[in-house]
Image (tube, rainbow, N blue to C red):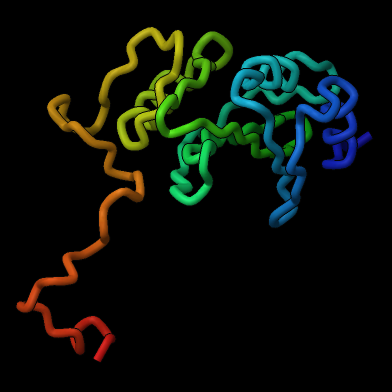
Length: 168
């Protein structure tokens, strides 16, 4: 039997009930979310389940949603079942004032650098990470460059010709 999105969703709901939610299928990829305290339980289940076998971590990244009060930061996991060639996306959300999410380095070795990069650019604190420090930016940097906390350009500049930027 081929592994379908409906079957994956069914297995997740059987195991976690209404703690997993937000099921969608953008471009055919099953996407869902769970509370941040459950990220390791869900990841372990997806990895260990004899039918699901999501044992390859493709990517971890962050997203900043400044208008989502209490859930401003998201950690997004992309997982791949190599046997059935199925990919899924799993999200957990954290408050920007307490961006703590448990590390997945105990389950996936590749999570080490991906979590360091996500920390470096979004400021998400991966609790239990063996070496959580900046990986691409300088240690002295006191902000997280991929958060949407700064304007994209200085609106007061007079040395810019709007016609050159398609705004004239």
